[in-house]
Image (tube, rainbow, N blue to C red; front, top):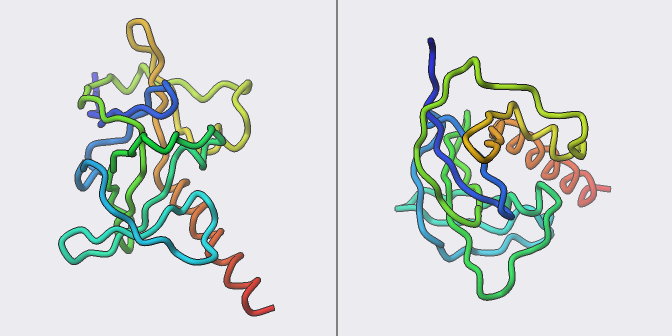
Length: 154
């Protein structure tokens, strides 16, 4: 039986996971520099020991309400093809191991925007684990950037 290790985290009381091999590091809240004209899902830039990383708010990507002012997000830094990106999440969980045969497709009842970001679902005792497709989150953000660039040129 083949298994996969997933780094888990929570967003709006839902449990998410991403393959450990895609995670660069997990950090507490980091100060961010806001990017003018950026979409709401892009919260800003973080300086990680000299590396500039874009911070993407998963709450916004998934259509969940914004955090209250007192709630600070945590950072799950994901390795991208060209650079790293930080996914802003509510809390960090554990690294868990799941068998690959326990993965199921996202249900058709999910909202299309959410379903597009989920590559699979694992049933755990007493809860569901939504396995995030980070490359889709990155793709959505890159298409935002291209759209903004087009608005500025037009």
